Image 1 (cartoon, helix red, strand yellow):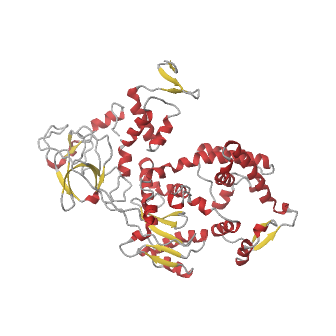
Image 2 (cartoon, one colour):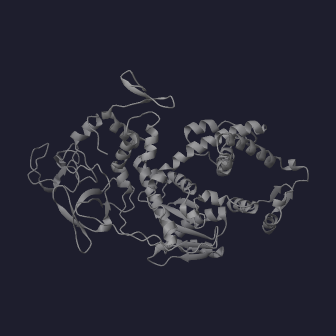
Image 3 (cartoon, one colour):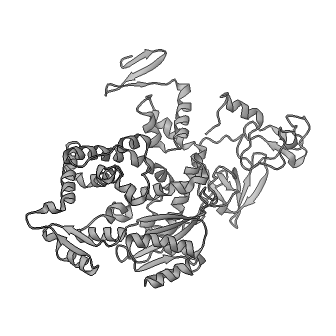
Length: 568
């Protein structure tokens, strides 16, 4: 057929762009999608498709990717929500930028390798800027230390909003009193009044659940900076389509100076040229803070040569940018230019980068990017530096958004919930189940990172008038459970013979080793083949029932050697 060719028993298709893509055999396509989806971190439909699309092609490829991702058990388990009732958020009036910070505590079910057990979540109510600080203990001393990081970066707000927790008393409350900050606390039993911080806690937990499906769960605190960065740089409907990062770096010369001062403190001097934009409010701000405003001599701006050279460098970098992209979007490229400059090693800094001098460590970036930005750059030639910085900015523009995908996956369809609540469009809803629905039954703690452990898949047999559900397993055994411990199971790839999994060994079921009948509760059923095994007959024997799914030795060997694959 035209556009196709065979080479070494592989079918290729020539695309309109002139590239050849592999057309895999129909029996290999499902396995290919599953392996790509699982190996790169359980990304969503678009991301998984984008990983396959450059190399493979077949008719209906996107639809098949969409179905297999929806059938992924790990993703469905991690995204399952057990909340019966959505929180009725009652946001307080927002008076302006840095007027109020909301502070909450997120408890993690497992300690990190560094001994951290909690995350202090601090979010600014106007810009939605978020700061995440891991702490080892739930004490006022540790929460106060975390708050000091925000105060030293952004200055003292008018209000700090917390719940009724004891960790926000003692030293925490004394710190606010000394700085004359109003400590507002939500009503007891109604933490939803600080809905912004409460929602951020849930977002963090969902993002970390997906992270821990792929990486070591005891390293969860190392992932917090990426979660915070993804949230700050994401456009939000409640902010008019802008991101917290954009709002924080918007406005006039005086406002820009305020942001620098609140992040890094007041310097001894500020050097500018003779421009009128550096008079008025700008000069008054420096006077109030007792900062010496030094201005270059008229006609001799070279006295501030570092800033002047940086202006020329930025112009040249933006010129290169506007040759490729829309010139009216030049302001969207500025963060990447700044990031490329901050992370680049510079000769006059002894080979260190501004980032290293400020934070005492090198930035965490991908290996391909790291190899490029570690070369020392000399700023003596602005044209050379503009080209290098422009190239590095493009690297960050392409590579860093990939680090935000886990956060985007973790966000629910109700990301606009807070905005709708403020406008009065949102009404809380209850989970409603019908007879025959498949549900996840929660058997572990609500905040556990092990979303694959303890979640049984059961079928709704009856809905009682008083609210509880009657759930049925595949052995016809039934239990009664509260609705808040059940979440809808949307996985379309459920095997009704192997699931639901509330089964126990039948009284006449024989062990695969000793061939004796069940013997009561000491029989384990394989969640793959449904055969029975006595715990004492296993090698080595088991003395307590394992948590979650259990695969018998026979099925486990088959899986290792590739004879069978686990269903997604």
